[in-house]
Image 1 (cartoon, rainbow, N blue to C red):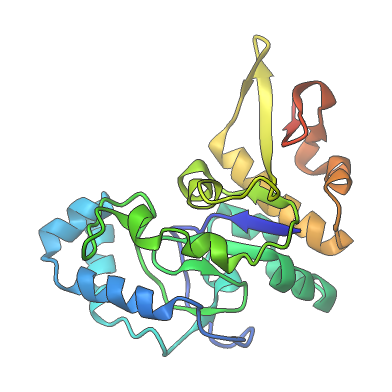
Image 2 (tube, rainbow, N blue to C red; image 1 turned 90 degrees about the vertical axis):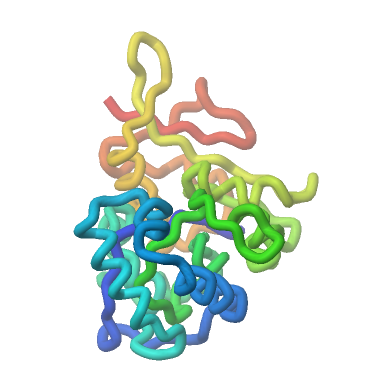
Length: 247
C-alpha cells in the first residue's frame, strides 16, 4: 500500500528536530526548474505565483538564496499547512515514522515526489503553475511519469489523499492492476455530497496519522476511521472511492 498527499504552500526551515535521510530522488530535475525560475524577472514570477506583492517579494528573495543541498528540512516537517498540522508528525512514535517513510509519498511541483525524510528547502511552485520548461509546455509535461515511478508500486492499492491538482500526475499513468482508492471527506446538503476544503485537509492529515498509528495495511481497515466526527458511509462508497461524512 502506498499513500499520496499534496504539499502545502506554507513551509518552514527546521534543521534540528529530525535528521534528513536522503536527498530527493529527482534533484537534477529540481535544479533545472530552479535555474528556469532564476532566469525570470520579478513581474513574471509574481504572475506565475499568483499571490500578493508581499508574499511574492518574500518568495523572490528566498528564490535568489536557494541552495538545494544546504539547510535542508525533512519534507514531512518542512510543510506546515493545515493537513500537516493535523497529521502532527512531531508526536509520531518510531513505528509511525517507519510507516510513513515506507508508505507515504508527497507530490510536489518542484520536487516531483518526495519521501517523508527527503531533505527540502522552502519554495513556491504549484504543480498547476503554467511554467514552460525546455520543450515542455507546463509542469505536468515536465514531470511526466516520474512521480508515478517514484511510488514503486508493486500490484498494491494506492490511497489517494491528494488534491486533484496533484493526484492526476499519478492517475494518468496507472496500470489496470494498480488501483487508486480515492478518499472523500464531505457532508450532505439537500441530499448532495459537498466538500469543505479546509475540513477535508484536516481530515486527510488525521487519516495519515490514523494509518501510521494503526499500521494500516489493508484498504478495509480505513473504514474504521472516525476522527473529526467523520464516519465511513457505505451507501455512497464504491470499490475505488471511500466516502466519509460528517454532520
